[in-house]
Each structure stands twice: as C-alpha cells, then as structure tokens.
Length: 351
Image (cartoon, rainbow, N blue to C red):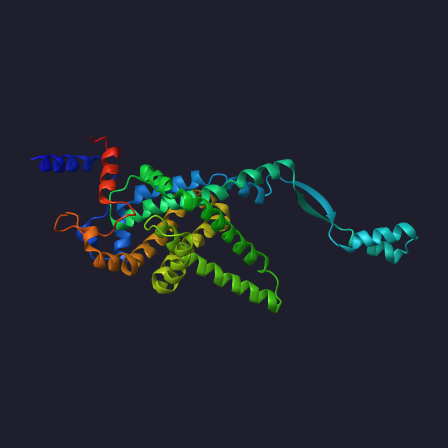
C-alpha cells in the first residue's frame, strides 16, 4: 500500500517537471539525425533558455568585444613608415636637399592608430573574469543538454546549478585552461593568416588542424565531466581517443557549427547591413546553445556505446532499477538512484 502511494506521488510530481523530454516511442533505438531534429523540436524552448544562461554566464566577455571593437580606444595619427624617425633625426643635423625633403614628406604620411586608454585596461580586467566563468557555464549547460539528448525531463535552471555544484572543483580550473587553449589557437591562426611565406603557411595549417582536433575533444570533455568520476587527465585522454573513434559524428557537429557561423557572417556583412539585427540576435537567442547541443548530441551516444553500455553489461546489479516495459534506461549519473530520487523530491516539494 505504501509503495503504491509513493508511486502515485511520483507520478503526480511528474506534472511539475519542466517538460516531458523526447518521445521514446519515436526515438527509442535511434541516435542519428532524425532523433536530433525531434529532440531539437521538443526542447526548443529549453535550448533558448540554455543560450540565455550561456550569454549571461559569460557576460564579462562582452567587455573584451568592446575593447576589440575599438570602443574604449582613442584615435591618434603617426607616420606610416618606420623610416620617418630616422630621417627626422638626420634632417635635424644637416640641411636637407629638395629630394630629401620630398622623401621626408612621403615617409611622413600619417596613419590612424588606436591608442589604449584607462578604460581599455579596466574593460580588459573585467573581461578576464570570463576565465573563471567559462568552465562553470560549460559544465552546467553540458549536463542540461546531455539530459535533453537522453530524453529525460529537464529542469533547466536547477539542473544547471546542480551540475555546477557537483563539478565546480574540476570545471573551474579546467575552464581556465580551456579558455586559454582556445585563445592561443585562435590567435595563432589569426597571426599566420596573412603572411604568405612557406613556414608561416605551414604553421597556419598546423594550428588549423589543432583547432579541429581540439573541437572534437571538447565535444566529449564536459559530457564526461558530468557523467563519470574521472580525473581531468583521464577525461582529456579519453576525449582524444573519442575524437578519433567518433569522426563521423564529430564532423557532423563541426559542419553544423560552421553553417551557423556562416549564417552569422552573412547576416552581418551581406545585404548592405539590412540583416545586421539578425546577426546580433542569432548569438543572443540560440546560436551558442545550439552549437553546444550539436556537440553534446554528437558525443553522448558514442560515449554511451563505448563506455556506458559495456559497463552496464558487466555490472547489471548497479542498474537493477524498476522501469516500465517500454522505457529504456540510457544513463546513470555519478550518483546513486536513491540520491537522484531524493533530488527530484526536493525540487518538487515532496516530503
């Protein structure tokens, strides 16, 4: 009798969940594109909320964007040629000829440069806080998006903080490392893009390959962090292996992200500026979370295939939980079923 009352209480509490997740009748045995689009449709509103969390969580980065745009800098005019300073010193010692005066005038043609101000350094300091929010936001949203891919009911806000509280000791230091790696790789590609000599071209393509490889690895890093109790070293090692094992899924995620970036570029730089508003709205509305969802969706089912399913087959006693006949138990977190049940009760005010 008591068990029946408890089951009724849990069924009743399910009406307070933040959505029903993916329909298992449609996606029970699928992990490809069809399931992705069904999942995206069913979780569209939640993905919008995740994007808001990502934007607000990394809000200090907007100050870096303001610095890069030149908003905090002042314009100054300096001679374009580096020879001007030397010529100026020479002409102060001896009387210049008409030819030398013409050369002096040509070499002294001014060029506008942007000079850093006090506000620039203040904005850079505020923007540096992104180093400390980057990993926390990524680990929290990875947990939420992973649950969406699994087809579980999702509490966007509470699930986000749940994952942050459980994983902040790993996410915080790795987020700093992750952000620095991304910045270094992007800076390397940017600085070697315009130079045409062989060595620089070789460095450009080498860094581009590293960016693609690290993109593949990042698909798996945060998903493993919220799924298993592993050291950061083992997570990185596994992610490097998964980057090779899941090439097909990884390339699909990369292709999807590149399409979104291409749309963003077209909105900003095409049609005479008419679509700039869409270019601004796309990242603020859904672009970041959709890219993250593509990566999580690409990585989760490969992790399930290689790590979760074999472990479940070897340790069936750890997964012996009652479920309905048509329900597939896809995932267990690094918590016991009792702990997860208690978490659901607390969220819904069940005593």
